Image 1 (cartoon, rainbow, N blue to C red):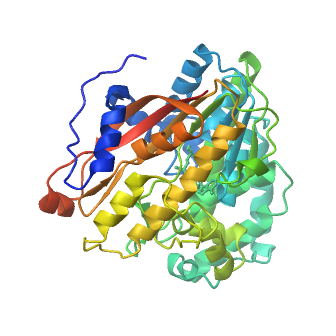
Image 2: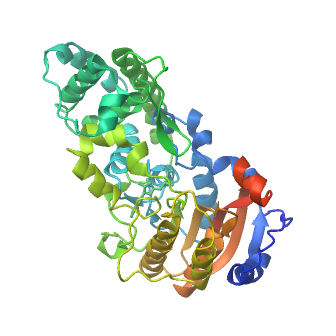
Length: 438
Ligand SMILES: C[S@@+](CC[C@H](N)C(=O)[O-])C[C@H]1O[C@@H](n2cnc3c(N)ncnc32)[C@H](O)[C@@H]1O
């Protein structure tokens, strides 16, 4: 791998002995690769057929996955490709096109549907989506609105009543379809919820923007179907010429419980990105989609929130949670003396690392010997305290039977202007961890 060895210094703050020792331990394996920086986000997918249809903001790019799968294949990894946090299914989707069998799991049912729909899109006959859309259109006015989780407040804030009613009727007619058209249409329908609502998936939250001009749902869906038809035609042609793998398996599952996952064979390559320890809550950002199809009411939404990895601020600690690394204790101790803008940040951080320890241990036990991992992670910083997620996870990986080959720094993120004023500018790494199972 050709990467620059120039690294920005990350000077440890006083009282950061454990973190300093991790920095020293991995310094020789850390490399900068700014050319990968633009591939760690979904932005590169905006022109990729299939991936461009639905904005899963937390996705990484097609090119990043292809880069690592090709690199790992070069190192002899030619078996099952696995993503324990598959999101909209980018890794399985690329793996299929590179000729590998693939399995993705995600705890969010919306992500599972998105991953399945994305893969299924490539199996459709051109013209099928458009014909179905034209057949469904006239039925919408005569169909009773579908049930949605009406008691979730964002549902009434996000849509004017007539819009919500029209969308619910569209949802009801889509529900009359059979698989795989049902999944694909639902997915396209979810893609129009943001433009048809007063919400924006902005930064870390689903923001209300009451001054937005709303899209017409019929027109927005027609446009999505038209785009999807282009993508169906694109893949229909490629499927015939290429060396495609089988349709990937995308299942609902918990990355902390890999022992429950029905692996057809031990994975030889993992390309993944877990949630970041940055307070982000997937059940809020995707609340509209979840309320339209996956949860019946607020209680179910809340239960889902508490069943995903504990990377968000409402995370709760369990009695037997113990910190998996001394650097985590050090950070928690340092935060005790800080004035945090949310008192739950230490709880979130501790539970995040407890959860990620389980994930890494599970990967260590299910992966094939010699198998490769590329994991994209973001470091975080709270009130000046750096949390080197990349190094802590790498240290945990070594305890679980992996060799840490490289920590590739894909980009540095600045601090918020508030933090910068108080603590100076300290770059925060976004890294790709390259591990190999011994
Ligand atoms: C950064 S995103 C992954 C995006 C993915 N790489 C893509 O390209 O779309 C992290 C994913 O982890 C999922 N997740 C959260 N908790 C989980 C858990 N306990 N097990 C499996 N997936 C989980 C989230 O729903 C989210 O889709």
